[in-house]
Length: 95
Image 1 (cartoon, one colour):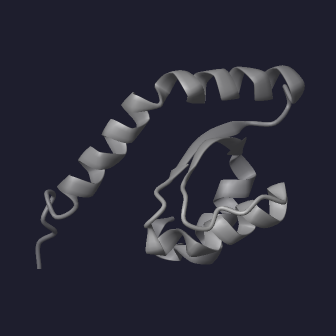
Image 2 (cartoon, one colour):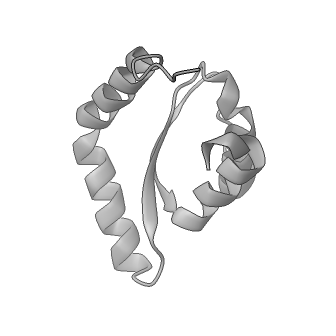
């Protein structure tokens, strides 16, 4: 059985557009984070409000920040290890 390289093209395109559209805010967040925490690698994170697979990630962000993300998305930078743990717990097939 052959994998279709275009199977998730729409989702990949949407991800690219979100990154392009929020490039400046992500860069500024990353600069600020690195200034305050130069020893911690960071990663940009964009969660769409309606992304069902992001429920675990949204809950972890709420716990870490003390803010509610119900009905809304998230755009910003977080420690790389935070995302690695979230992906391993919520989407192990992605690793």
